[in-house]
Amino acid sequence: MDTGFIAHDDCLLHDMGAQHPECPARLSAIEDQLIASGLINYLQRIDAPKAERKALERVHDAGHIDRIIAKAPANGIVHLDPDTAMNRGSLDAALRAAGAGVAAVDAIMQGRVRRAFCSVRPPGHHAERNRAMGFCLFNNIAVAAAHALEEHRLDRVAIVDFDVHHGNGTEDIFRDDERVVMVSTFQHPFYPYSGTEGRSERMVNVPLAAYSRGAQFREAVLSEWLPALERFGPQMLFVSAGFDAHREDDMASLALVEADYAWVTEVLVAVADRHAQGRIVSMLEGGYALSALGRSAVAHIKVLSGL
Image 1 (tube, rainbow, N blue to C red):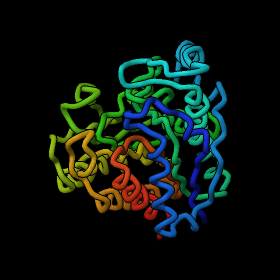
Image 2 (image 1 turned 135 degrees about the vertical axis):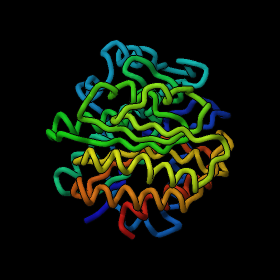
Image 3 (image 1 turned 135 degrees about the horizontal axis):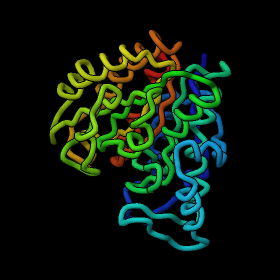
Image 4 (image 1 turned 90 degrees about the vertical axis):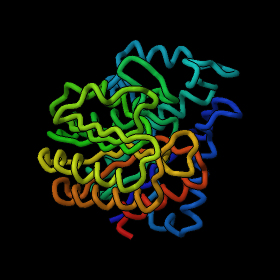
């Protein structure tokens, strides 16, 4: 069964300025590497639809959605905070990014693909129920997970986040939802300076010190993530796939490499095969060193595809 590759050209239109690291070239870097590796030929491309309001309202307050729509400029750039801005293409891009996860869930649950990678932007895991931040407007992974729970009546889903930054928005949205387990690693102390105070059996946050390498990351996965995932038995896995913990990415100070991303994907595929009929939706989060991003994403997608 094919692996879905969910994308849309509208996601290239979101531009927060020439020097901003969360740039359209990130998506091109991934697609270029997929073409160069030949992996693109094994993926089923699906155009990301725009998320409907009801999908957004499962995880965001109506007021937050209204503010994002109202802030969308006709021209120029509008800043929501020092890191997060919108141009005239940002709203459509954000709706496509959130809609990609919905389309991925539907394609998997309908048997059209077994797993899917959403190559979309802006990213989402910092967006809280009522606040945009950290380059994120809507919480894409949360929208996807909530869609699986509500529309497809799943009882248990797991969210896995290996971005270098803690997924504070995802935790904010699902902290009190017993249907969701979240496991994550992130550099600490580091932006957004969260993740260490809210740990529970369902919020398994593992901070990593600056300059941690693959050995420390793998130990966290084996000793902390796996027991939580096995206890919970998720019916679908959702991955916030941030590749900014790569050693070449100067936005942070961890030192993972492509082999680490391939390894953790193998671990997650095995969990999904045991508990979730193999079902995984992976969504792009961070990753700002373009060559490292492309290579790491290909390593991740290759394992998702069983190749």
